[in-house]
Length: 117
Ligand SMILES: [Zn+2]
Image (tube, rainbow, N blue to C red; front, side, top):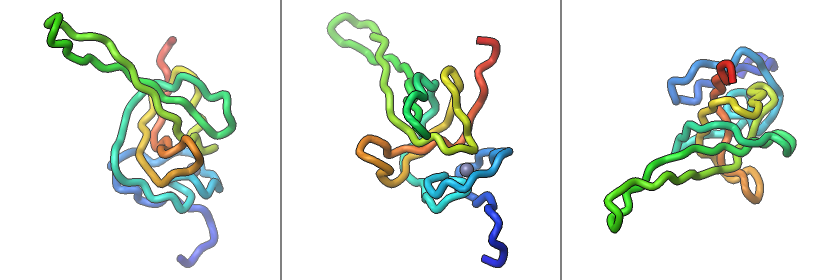
């Protein structure tokens, strides 16, 4: 409240704070975006749209008829703030937030760079 500098907030997820700072108001760390609800970990599939990333993750679902698991995948659109710089192939953590646009209800809160891929 005293200084005008951008400062990381404690967003309450026990995640490491980002190294970089940004002035994006839609950033969970530096903006005014509260996060609550669901949290996902997934792989970045596309970052073609500005400040946006498509996150995809796979899971197994049991099919009773065949007594086997089928591989399924799910994807969501998340906000990619300038301080996160998530790129295709990165593993990211996304948290649910208020709707940011027609399709974006999630924001990237942590990035683990892809290793040797
Ligand atoms: Zn930020």
